[in-house]
Image 1 (cartoon, helix red, strand yellow):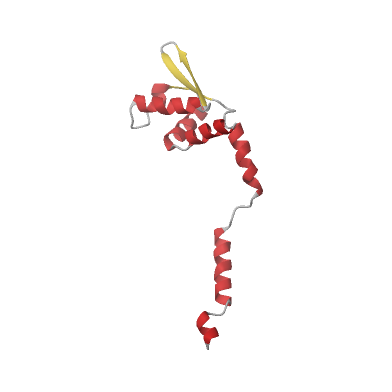
Image 2 (image 1 turned 135 degrees about the vertical axis):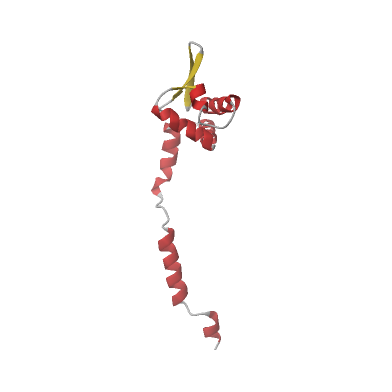
Length: 116
């Protein structure tokens, strides 16, 4: 399972691949339609699609002469379960922490004052 998670997170690490996944949330798309909004070659998009397919995030099928991409809805399940295990920790409120530090620092005697 760890190897599968590695593939999923590596695929998700790239902003182009995340954008492709967002596009496929709407509907299946032809590879040429996936490539349209990006300023890169069709070969580069195909490499991104292969990485997504190897991670199991999308599937590709030939319909006639056109290759179509489809989002795999359950592909993120294991990654989601793994990430939820960290939900037991409360997020740090940095503003509250900063106020706490300011209060503590202003309340403690300065080193110069204790020397006299």
